[in-house]
Image (cartoon, rainbow, N blue to C red; front, top):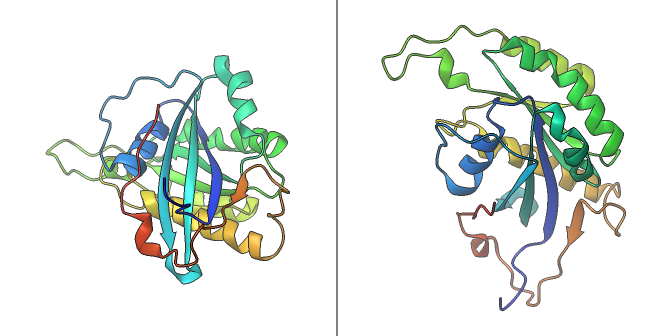
Amino acid sequence: MAGISWHYVLKFIITGDAAVGKSSLLVRLTDQRFLANPDPTLGVEFGSKLITIPEENKIVKLQCWDTAGTESFRSITRSYYRGAAGCLLVYDVTNRTTFESCRTWLADVREHADPHLTCILVGNKVDLCASEDGDAPRRREVPAEEGERFAQEEGLLFVEASAKSGENVQEAFERAARDILAKIQQGVFGDDRSPGVKTSRPTNNNLTLDQAGSNGRCCT
């Protein structure tokens, strides 16, 4: 690699109940494709993506750890929470139980991750609420207003998304990244205060957003 092609590396975790679409969200972000029937995550899976934040004139590398949603892997996945700067807390809008579990997941993340972590609540699978492929739509069990209200109460960002269509997937990561960049500017992160935020000094002063490219690669 001839030079450093990003300004910050941000550590993200993706958490929530099993089968809410965490792995599918990660693959949609990194590979721009949909996993129709992903295998259950055993422990953690990893993916990375370069994104640009034009208004900040910054290139950011997201290092994302997709954690298993089952209790048997909880002790393993907690170790990946440590130092995370960003978190996607995911639930399935057609499964109320997964939404109710978010409070427990959030408490777990706050106990083990960086205290200044930025968390965005993501209501996934909104595509299932519409009949797009001739199938009968599923009943939505969590209204968007309820998800947004919970996010406001807990100081979270909020978005509804679809790993299948790609709706709001990259936007979720970008919103969280912008919030982290704002915290860096405020002095909350930086100066090696958090292992979840690392800075890179470009070897040439002409680093531009065009160098970021449009595609990331997923490494599992």
